[in-house]
Image 1 (cartoon, helix red, strand yellow):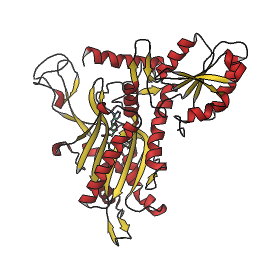
Image 2 (cartoon, rainbow, N blue to C red):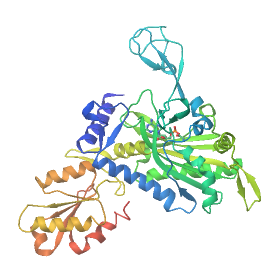
Image 3 (cartoon, rainbow, N blue to C red):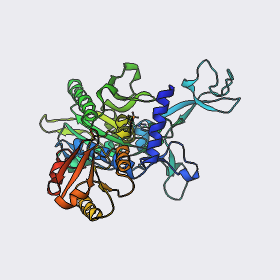
Image 4 (cartoon, rainbow, N blue to C red):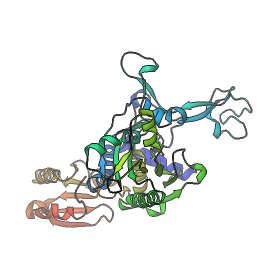
Length: 438
Ligand code: GAP
């Protein structure tokens, strides 16, 4: 990492802490590597991103159903999915300094920490799933895993949804939820964590190469455009199709949506053609017929699956990094209004002459529509800067003129332009950009 990109990342991490976006997990005890807590600003930001994903993929569509499955599942799920056998990293220990490394990251057979050559243990395969036990017995029969991906809950419920909802292929099932991976080397702030959230959608279609390819292309474009729609800079967003030798064992095709983070270009989301691999494996391991009867075609088959799989924490980090701008006089997060954690801040210019009462009433009225912030402390310029740093699109100031003419000034974050609006017109005025609210 070059010094300037390193500094940018450090500044973003420091802003996240200072402005209550993201804290280290259990910080008072020295933290826990790979785990993060979202503060009052961060939780709003991440909830907005998840809500926009859910709105655009589930509630605004007619062909996708949502589910919310448990994190702990029958251990057989992970045998069927292939995770018990192959969700592993190859590891070696340095016999000199006892450091542990991924075998494929060792260059010239030299220890990256102490420099010793040719002194490693045999390669051992380390499974990335967290293990725990259900019930009072801690033995093999009660061992379960914290799910390392959310999509297996969708496959396990495919038949339930087909039998209870009026779905017809092509259709999708979507889920947002926690996933856990015992990453060997969590790094780059929240980018690679041990506990994180996924936003996954499995789109089932006819098991026909052309049909699957059509939906694969469709979802690549949809998902790429989704990030652009909420303001991610196009020049930093890339679609990369995987080479044949990069594909996971279950995939017939895969493309990554990548973002240029300060620490380099890295994966935000993967779109994969998983074929009929998962449903067939679950049918084999559960001994249940999970095939689908297509009435229109009068045929029974195992559908193919196209899967856009995104990380909610990675998306949140990308929106933060992308919005971050340092100007001569201020640091500002230029969030898209629907992404911004706080939509409107309300300030009384001074704490007298009826201004605080009027400002508080406006604040409480606007709170019925949007997440708002009230600030009556310090110089108004500093209050603006504070809101700029959390990316609030509008600041409303109640001044002496307000009390006389029932009007306020509305300052727009990016242009810093101010207009005077009558109080009765405020909701209309703000609704032009602050749409339905998520
Ligand atoms: N069901 C397919 C699947 O899980 P993946 O590429 O392993 O595919 C999908 O994960 C997405 O989940 C990634 O693109 C990333 O956004 C997020 N993700 C995966 N591992 C992560 C980690 N350790 N920390 C944060 N996000 C992660």
